[in-house]
Amino acid sequence: MSEVDLDCDKLLAEARQRTGLDDFGDPRFRAGLAVLLETYRRAGLTDKGTVSTRKRFVQLLSTRLRIEDAFRRHPEIRQRAIRGPMYLTGLPRTGTSALFNLLGMDPASRPLLTWEGISPDPIAGLPAGTEDPRLVAMRERYEQARQKGLGFDAIHFVRPDGPEECVLLQSHSFSDAQLGIEVLMEPYATWFQQQDLHWMYAYYADLLRLLDWQRPGERWLLKSPAHLWALDILVEMFPDVCVIWTHRNPLEILASYCSMMETLMAGRFAVDRAALGPTVLEYLARSLERGMAARDATDPGRFLDIDYRAFVDDPLAAVESIYAHFRLPLGEAARRTMRDYVANNPRGKHGAHEYSLEQYGLTAAQVTERLTTYLERFAVFREHRS
Image (cartoon, rainbow, N blue to C red; front, side):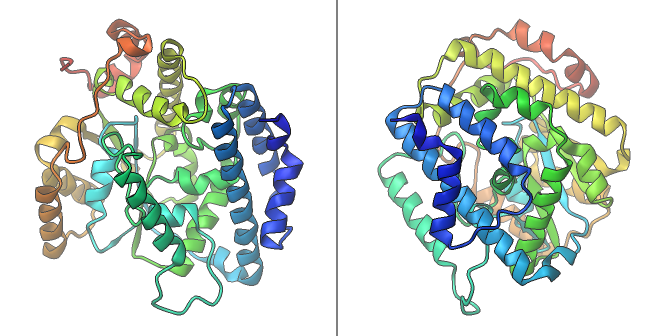
């Protein structure tokens, strides 16, 4: 494939042609887009990887155009209030997804769903009560992929209409964690860590308002390990925010996360496992450092720590502690729905995910040494279970 296929001007032009629109909104997205494109040009993409990467960027840009058009036609959207959102964060593979799905069983929770994170823009003229055709199409694609064994359910099970991470929304800014692999690749890795993320989070908050305008809920439930980079911004934007920080022995998660990133990378370019492990460790260590520093400078009452093993041992007790800490009502109907969910979704339901630190050029000593401050502060180090 020629590098011209990832030419910025051509991608912008194609998005304009597809949508018939030309206003991309805040021009600051262009800086991140340029760095992302340079990162992928350096990555040695396969032909298939170039095609999929180009398709993704055109889709993001086209959606961004439709988002701005919705804001233009309905300026009242930006005036909507997002009250008392609940955020889950922590290192990847620490139980955030399991807890996210469980908390989402509460009718008072309004989680971000996979399909709407990808397609937050409204479809004009869609009759009330009609299912969005983009959700229908995504269900069909996911089902076809699972039938062919093309998914990675054992690593991270995704439902088109199930709760999913905020990175799907934030990707439209081109200044976020994206798929999670870009922040491990240069030059985007260095560029991202040097950014003031205020403007990106302001845009993200507007996207939440856009979704709330379309399908409102009582209390937003949101999640991403990448929020560790901006906990201070979340508290600044939403002074009544509730932040749940999950913790697990890093020796149990590092290789798992490396395996997940390798799976996402492998479809686009060759992966050097020995280099991937140290890169992932450093990125996650810096996210923890950023998160701990931000937490120290904000209201401690906005935060609650949840231990992974305690959550696995008694998920409903963890939920009770969350609602008690943030003084939220938990009705019997919600409790019953959550109990049913726990009973019907045992750990490992979607298959085993196998990995080891050594596969990714890491040792237990390296991990514990680099994360000493975190381990000591939150007392999360437990005997490593292989």
